[in-house]
Length: 293
Image 1: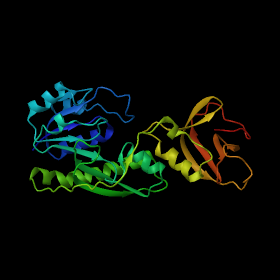
Image 2: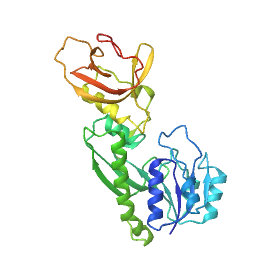
Image 3: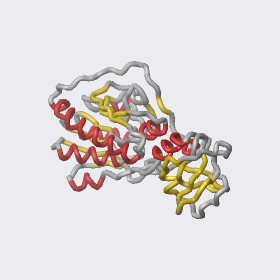
Image 4: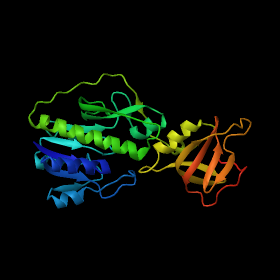
């Protein structure tokens, strides 16, 4: 089974390396030279050069140059793991087995954008990883394999990313032989389920009128490898990378008020208690009694 691999993020790198480790017949790689969109961007050409796999840089996965390059390789299937734009009909129909895609959620629930981030911000207790055959919709094709993972309150973006990788590698080892031997099955999705929207900058704003737990989920969901949550102090946007729950019995204090400074840790009043900002980009630590928006 000849495979063309498409990807441009760290997850793509892990999966491509695993395919090579499993002796899969990867006949081509499509990737990007750079990306302003993905904070976890990886150029896969380095791996391609090491293993003498033909590769193509593209800015448009659906253009005629890319389509011609794919057709020329005469592969059986495309694996598209970690690509930020939808593949159109002309690409989806090239290979006899179609295009295998990936989504880090338990579709049909939670299709759409930023699934790891939204699952943490919303305080979900579980998510998962799904491999599916791509069609013209977004995350709507037949499911090949799906596996759940738990989300703890202490999880952040990095730990969820790692859970996603561990799940996915296990799944790849399970379903790759089935694809090769044509002994796999496809499970149609129902039309139920939701689709998450694209995040805006304001979705990363810490509003201290939120509960302390909600602020923890927001900050942890946007921590590295992503772009970070932020608050406003004066006229400056300040990144906040790590927080901890704290306590406060002063119910007559307004949210956003700085209650205490412990070394460089900033204790701030929230709607229901307090939060401790433990890793942040404040150049000047605000004084007790000041307000952070």
